[in-house]
Length: 228
Image (cartoon, rainbow, N blue to C red; front, side, top):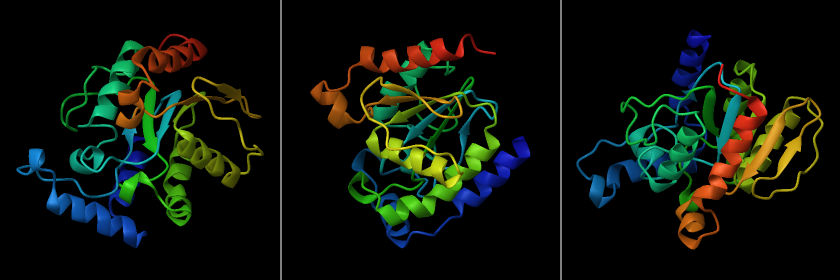
């Protein structure tokens, strides 16, 4: 199983299928943000991250320009990640509450993080074509993650992208209502929990608070039971 994830990672990081995303991710990596001007940016698609035997799958939108696109790991090195990993840690899914860089010792327990797009998109808005093109990687992960029982989607685009992947696999599922902490049971028994994305736009305005995010992962933990 580990070899299959390593093979997937090797294929993902070499992907250049979307010209607009390739140009943007590499330009951001060259120009950098002043605070990180001495760092070497990752500037490539993000590889798999998490426990291959995970029962919890967390699906985001895409890497942040100066977060994942800089560090090479989902939700790492930015404010969104600070919120997400604190919540995962409190619910027992992460080994530590911070995620600064990909070699900081963080591991996920019974959890796996992915996104519907692997490269940072301009204005955090991937095109429909880019979403369709990138879906192949999510489909590969779903094939490998045989033990997933609960999925948390961070934002409406993540929900729509995840449902599109299920339909591509032959699962009959309609358009589900999105709302924070709304939980759906899918035809195959999978539990799907919606959450507002921990973007600064949501957290700075109070649309998403830490207790609200804890509610989502506490529910996931309750549905799964103790870590195995």
